[in-house]
Length: 414
DNA sequence: TCTGGGGTCCTAGGACCC
DNA sequence: TCTGGGGTCCTAGGACCC
Image: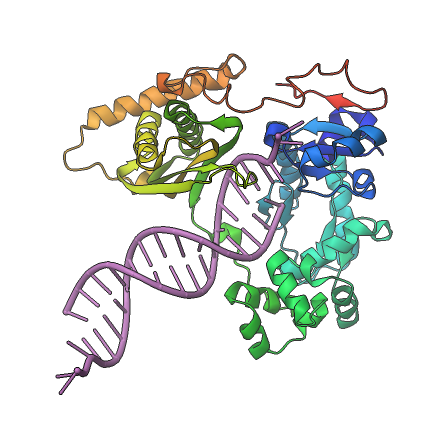
């Protein structure tokens, strides 16, 4: 929503929500929308009435644009030269020096700098572990009195912060775990942190124990920078309507292969393993359900789109059952290796490998410059996902004329 | 009527080995 | 009738994250 407010300043101080693909769910919302009782993750159709009666601005997500905003924020943070670790599109960790005189002030300086550089409001939490820093950031975001930065650096602040944090709000403790912990009488982050080691191991697994250690000030989350390259890449979609035909699913698989191929080549990565999955609509419990997946090791690491598409279609043929209405499908490549990890096979035609590489270079370059007109793709992709997924908010309805006077609605720029 | 898309990590259990 | 003990590797599924 902060990104949208940059290009649509009239959204300032107004309730606004951003929808997922297919305009299915609320994935982001302004504080004003939260105040109306809208929660992240709810299906849009359940709040449509509320949205119209209260004049909530509704936007289809523009993820390319959000990525660009994110890059501006991360560039600003990188200039601080403090070991930036980008955690997600809207979150990052910095490693501050131990001898920093005024961490509080520095936190506010960071928030101010990002606002100046990128026009995105951010909250800063400072503590000795990542999990505690996220507890602190939650306070900085929630209470304007912190002016954007909250610091936990002594026992009394630690006790206060953890006692005011519901256990389910701790990073790493989700719905299942927090329900179980509450049944055990553990309601706050402090209750959890004060458990003995034996109780912790009885109640949670290794991941949970790590969270417990972090809350007690023992840093044990690995540096993201230490991780090797990407372990998997996925492309998947929910379809606008139920898909019955194998041909349309094949077309979708080819489109996924197209997306994944580009992403792999962009990072100079090669896939060693490939998996496809298809599923009927799990929310329609009255109709018969089927979901399945299949995977295989590729004969050699690849990032050549036609080879990815061919393998994906072979796997699809193995699990496809006719008579079901498929609502979702996807393609995953796993165990991605760098170019240096690829050895030509004993009988490989080296000139063919080189030809394929050059072909992909040309298509990638063309698709970068022709993205608005669709670019060029393998023929098996057909129209790609165009006829299978919804393209933007209310794109099938009259975009603005039918909208009530006080409701702002924006079409996706696509 | 209408319910996203992208990831990581851990665990249990089975197949297989000697 | 009576059938060990120690491993590794792989996979499916669940829980969590944004």
